[in-house]
Length: 376
Image (cartoon, rainbow, N blue to C red; front, side):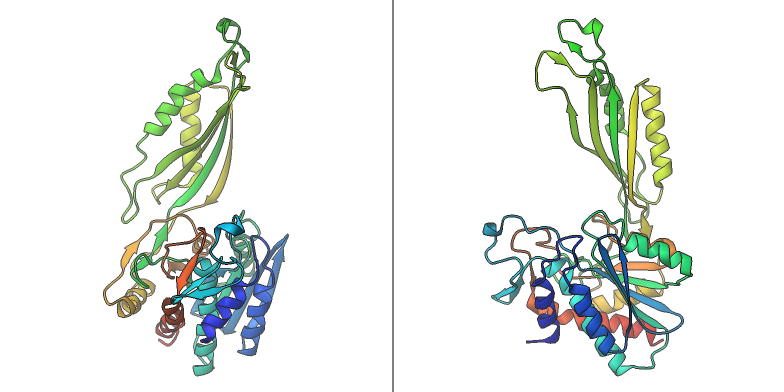
């Protein structure tokens, strides 16, 4: 059994449902320390973070990943125990196989091989891991990034191992991500009997024109390779459950995925102004998941394009699609960030899996990226 497959199986066997790391980072730190890495454990609240470095000075290349996974759901829905990794027909099954314990295992093996071959390499090779990517993402890389700001920790390049490939390993290079902003809108009314509407104030009726304007808003026409900003209402709730009662309150949950035309404060101000124009009595709470980031043409993209082209047989698609990743916290430190990982076909699903052949190719892919970036 290959080193990376064995390590991936060991990680999957640890039920590290967010934010529990379940010993994954201790296992990885022990390996990396044996390879000569300096390891610092950064625990914030219930979240474990690992910062492992080899070498010194610039440039600083960070391999960014997470050891936590989403809950597996009903165990009986899986073909095999989600935390008992199993190989069937050349495929490794288990929670986290693709998202992203396979990539984390490949990071570690690639790092071990690189420093063994180049013990006096220029610059710094670092691995940053968290157990808070799938959860609230408060005490993970977000907190580590704050600490790095205080320390003046420089990061030049960051490669995140999120599963980015679509049909085959290396066919997509993610060069940015949209920002994410969630809102909870509470519109106040006056509860009453439906037969006496003059004695009540229906918040649904009052909010309807504002919500129609909100969902019909054209925010922008896109930004370079980013799609247009979009807003989606995900939940509306009001009423007591009785059909003869005018509700006293309406709650609306919505989310915006936005490109670099916007930032969270500007969007918040725009939406508050819209609601104010409609004369609503309301409260609005925001959750800022992260600002958009974009890596322009430069050495990181050029090297990644070349290496992925060699592995996939043709140049990769370069994309800014998808949800969010922890790179959104590293990019504001001044780092150029890309995402490269295995095929994204089964993440967060029952019977999550990764091709064994792809998993065994990942250390060479990451290793080649490290060599091309650090061995100038």
